Length: 219
Image 1 (cartoon, rainbow, N blue to C red):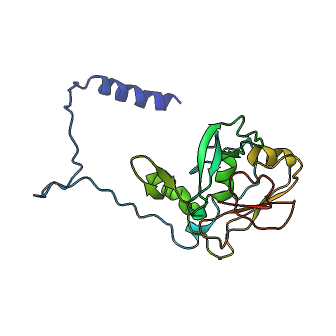
Image 2: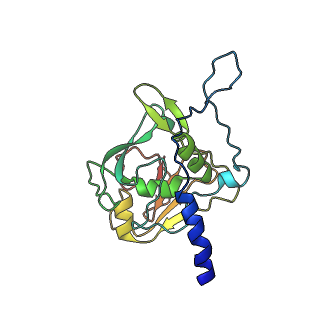
Image 3: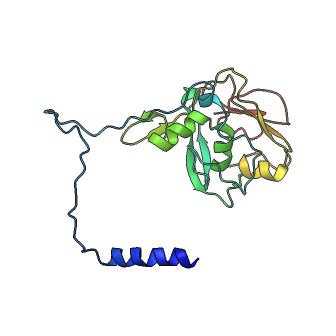
């Protein structure tokens, strides 16, 4: 210990004795240095998004409100479904209100979806890449509207169905009431759609934002 101290003190004294000089700010180039054409700065990232990385689920754990699932939806907000009857595939979720502990309370007149749940149910790994780097894939981006669309899910066996078997969790995550004790979510082989089924029946039906107790809801 004494030998270490004897070595440290002279070094410390030497550093204190160095003259201090002020260094001016240096501007770093964000464009090619010797180009005769003015171009914006560019950045290329070599990301590992090959198969099967890009098609795997963003979240594989069981759903819980004490966990925050990040993604295209705000986990702290509730969403309503804007249904387009002329073109159902153009329907989308729209922010409506703040959630309470990442849970939403629906009524017959307003059916709410938890953004936290929608992220858990729909996000794939490629969605996470897109969200972090560019805010997500913009299938529509105008001065008035921006719509984000999830990654295309094809049949590859890497996106197993997800389920919740807790009536209280279901009521806070979806418009289903506590009478529904089980939900099953499916995105595999559905492209950019999502099916959410209850235990009420097995009938598949487009969700229009109002049909409260359909068996499967389509995003």
